[in-house]
Image (cartoon, rainbow, N blue to C red; front, side):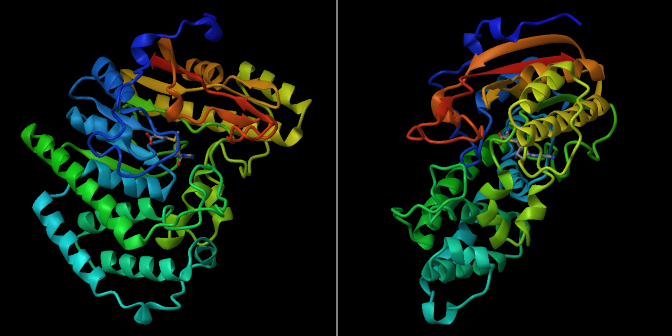
Length: 418
Ligand SMILES: C[S@@+](CC[C@H](N)C(=O)[O-])C[C@H]1O[C@@H](n2cnc3c(N)ncnc32)[C@H](O)[C@@H]1O
């Protein structure tokens, strides 16, 4: 295998998109999501690596950036994610609703909220964790809002408002919003659910209309776009059917997506038990796998070095690399001949050991059969990615943590063909 020295690759300015604002364009700003793709990056990959007839897949679809950009370019797309909150957001972001109808339903919701009577909405049972995060008043108001949205029987319309409600849950709770870990903010200015919902929904309505009209004008409204609530290691996507996979895998031990989305998951009954929900996420601290051996030489070297420092972390990282190997094989199965994979991935450091995820995944992709490679290095605008981590746990932290260190100022784009 031709050796590539990742560290000495020059940063490629045309992939950095400094000062480019695309995160609020179209429907991209509907819902916050950790480690969101930069839409410009996906746009450039679609334009350079795919043609009109290609189906584009994102195996870690998250909040659907790849699928939205695919639709804008008139390409069919499929997204896969294990997280039902990601599924809901992606579905809504990729399928705009007829604007006049949506506005009508919004007026009906506003009318219902005007008639809200707190006395009729006390002591509603949702989930014990909801009582931990919300004041009784806000809990009752959100329950009323939720019921009002559920009373809309047109599914795409109901889903649209569910996304808006999901987005504002953190604002209306005690959740510390600057943190990637679930913790209470004792000084928080908690906002009122009704007005926060209405404000955010108005912004979404505007974006929905712009997106709808753009797609209508370009005859892309019916461009196929599917989101599957599945595991990236084993999907129902057809063999040799995909023109390009464009994705960004979860980082190892950085975000606990199950924890981060627990407010929506509890309100919408997606989970009864967070411990069960967490297990299937790749990169989680709670992975059940016990295997310490990795087929990738780069991976094994990292795991062995970590074992000299901390057995538990070594196991987490080994699990992550083994999961990523399963994902690499799945990518090879679904991509058609001459199709490609475009992977956006960063390295990090945990317990002073360099976790070279980009090098490892590149090695995995070559070993499963991909060839003809390009590796691009880009720097990440700081506001888009937390760059501060706890030295020991490897988790994202705040600058005032004296044990912090900076990570991810750069990431790689791996492009390989089948
Ligand atoms: C880095 S985020 C992707 C963000 C996405 N690029 C975007 O623009 O929103 C990684 C995603 O991987 C998902 N994920 C984690 N484990 C998974 C698994 N086993 N199968 C499918 N998706 C998984 C998480 O739920 C998360 O949405």
